[in-house]
Length: 399
Ligand SMILES: Cc1cc2nc3c(=O)[nH]c(=O)nc-3n(C[C@H](O)[C@H](O)[C@H](O)COP(=O)(O)OP(=O)(O)OC[C@H]3O[C@@H](n4cnc5c(N)ncnc54)[C@H](O)[C@@H]3O)c2cc1C
Image 1 (cartoon, helix red, strand yellow):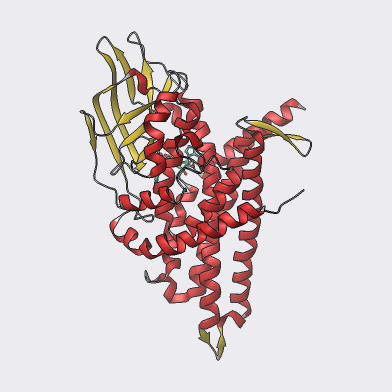
Image 2: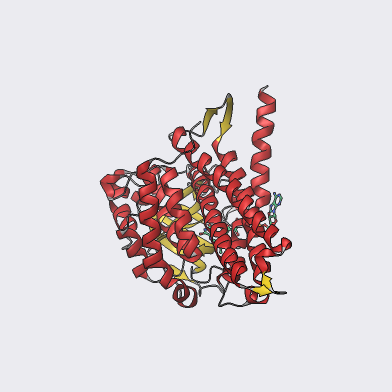
């Protein structure tokens, strides 16, 4: 077992950390106050970040998942909002196009996403359908005049600023509306098309720089060439997109925990009470130890999971240490554990800061507000437990 990053990965990590320190950290307060600007996507595009997991022929880097999570955690360390908005564009929208799109779709959409010239989003959730993805009501109906999209989407990252959305809809033909997951279809929707409207950006507890909103579709004409893969493949494609999202959520949580540790360590060394630095009070020292331990456990699981994704080479299962491992369940385990640990770490970090931690001028207050999304977005913790438990049940059934 070799848990050592190679020289290229270490060099890349150092270079990308430096980029984040110089180009993202100084913008983080402005992004929080005013929302992410197009310039930030372009910076991330020029740095190669948006293309990490995309093929070189469209401007990507063709990098490994392990390399990608190194960069994702470095970005999350400095700005959660930038991490989420760029991830929704290049990851949530971009990766399904990369993996399931036609050559024509890849050539049309990937170069813009990878360079940061265009912004995408993945629109699955609806006002009446979140965890239960298969219950969505948006329809994509085949009419004599062509394909028409009708419905609405809620809580969509980048809905207010995206150029296009990958929309999950129920494909209907011959007047039939299929139920459950069977007819679900992903289609690429130009958000500047007639019949598309957007709600106001929603006011949120955290991630205030990452715009979230609603999308409304009223008889939007969808070209046949914008269906991803084939009609009916959408549920499986969406679940795959969630696997990738859950892996990157682990990277987000790691970045947040690293920020908690650095902020808390330096604060605890400077702040004095009862004649000494608070880091010398045992209860404060123990809080630092708890952050550090959660962080290191998360780092190990993140790196191993990314490495497993790389080894699986697109397959959903692989043999690992004598066991058959379901990659979806592993991604859920990673997200479940790291999101809980990261939330606990932000709480500890605010506690170490005392009253200062409650003030917006201290970074830990933003980390505390932002982190809650990790237990909700990309599937709630309860849904992750279901996925893990179902995989285990299948395993025992196979024995
Ligand atoms: C900031 C933000 C950004 C988002 N970005 C996107 C995006 O880009 N694209 C997108 O499509 N969606 C996005 N979402 C939506 C997100 O994926 C959903 O909020 C999430 O999946 C939960 O769905 P819900 O809110 O409808 O909660 P519900 O499904 O209504 O769940 C409510 C509660 O019930 C529990 N619950 C539900 N069903 C079960 C069950 N079977 N067993 C046990 N417990 C259950 C849940 O765990 C939760 O605690 C975003 C959400 C937020 C907050």
